[in-house]
Length: 585
Image 1 (tube, rainbow, N blue to C red):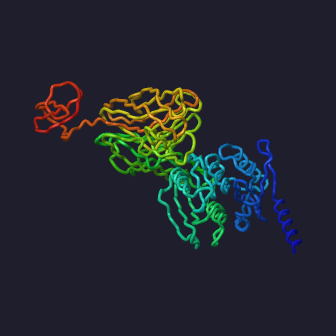
Image 2 (cartoon, rainbow, N blue to C red):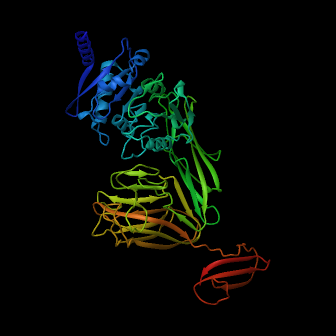
Image 3 (spheres, one colour):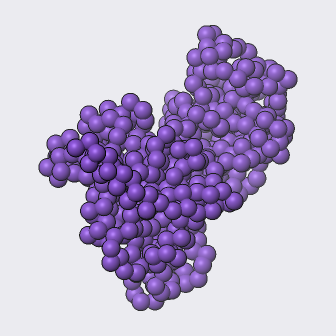
């Protein structure tokens, strides 16, 4: 009996080895295991499935159990071997390996390049997320299992990406409690609805809850398969196989669409239009649409604002600037692309107009490990546009824990290259989810600043700039406090800055902070507030429309005065109307 078992085991090993193959990539011999159904035919799909750290292709193949569905649906599956049983999740080494596998499968089996899907378990799942930002133009859909980038990521891709993520809630290796932040980031990038369609007891499995976000741009969906009480393994029980679910999702996607596709790169859906003042101001919203058709040509792209046709363009670039006074509340932008066959595609962005009367706290949404909404950072190599979470290196908000300390949360920026204006944080630019307009008044940009790891100290420049009228205020400050490269250090003496400036007409603005122009120059900026000097008093403003009867001045306590300085001026008109305002005499 033992002899028969050994013979059977050897048979399995030989059978598996027969499917192994090698490939030279960037001068290195790489290997993979493949499963090819009989009578495959041509132009069939390809699924690439990456193993976990310290695992191998044979183990991944045994866990995924894809053979039955592959035999029925007729697709090739490749299980690559990572170098040292691991994956490059920050560079291009294994990205190039995947590209080479695709080319090899096209040569050997004439697979359909437009239906290539990528999946991976644990570190293979981390690599799957990495590939979304690198080769979304080559992969039609992605299926990470029990893995995500532990150091966070930027949610950028060449196209909207369909994703199905499978994860156990009891995973003690790659914690489940961080999964949602990655789902949320890709839901936002794909412009999917933020409320999921929830299915409990999925396919009769009481431990599975399925969350489906979509459709988003190009009709893509983001799906989370939540496996209750499952640990760090590929779940195959209660009649639901992970491999089957991956195929069921991925097969709906191809890089070639018979219909046109359209997406909005700006503005982001959920963008907030802030006005500082007592009434809304005029905003100019730049709308940038990306439209294409794989089977025809784009005939036109129509732009709609609040359901009203704004413009129709017949040639790229498909850009339009929508300028209006946006009433407080919800607004919408819609673009409709039509190809020459009459097929259409639609993308929508929702906006919300808000008013801040006296003060706006630009650090209100600061959270450790995040780049908050409204902010964008750049360190000379990487641009990060909020909202991003779970960041463990690079530009991000740091949570200070030392005692004593001058602040709890600060935005860390750095300049890796040393080039001018390459260590930067922006607030309220076209690339972020916030726009900001100021009404006529006196303002002050207030913030606290120190250095992070510069014992010799490095200057930082703050700037408020009008998108139409140039720089409103700019000042360079050299901090006198250095935290010392650890959030647990105590620190005091951080520099508090107030930069006054004046706005005389409704003005869209953005705010910027720059590090010194030196390699690894840095800064921590905290308690960032924009303060508006309220021109009103306890009496309400009534615009006079007739002849002035008299003018009176009072000090801020309400007593009549002839003194110079900041006073209340009350203007009485012949028709009895009164206007009260703060003025500088």
